Image (cartoon, rainbow, N blue to C red):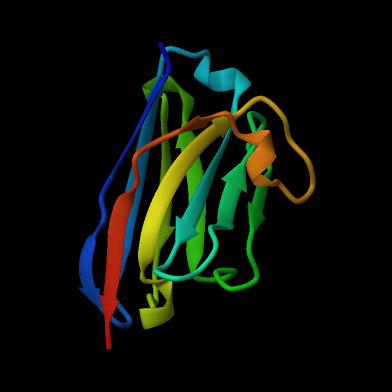
Length: 123
């Protein structure tokens, strides 16, 4: 059974930093692309950042230069370092694992999802 578990969310002031972690089990982690999505109240879920099994990365324009995605295959864990946080980054952040990769990943590429971790950025 595949399990995807996020951690690291919380409340932070604007300009601060957080690091999200995502651990996946029940799958061959090295063979999967991993990604972060987020959903703010009243808005659609959007892709934030993704990393392929070969460590290629993709960032949404809204987070480029502020967020860094990485993975540690030995620990079956992916990270999202979020710096210079803004109130508009406030959302539930979801981790997902998928077996496909494209230049601009989409939700349909990801079949395994976590329950989410809340990130709140105060102004």
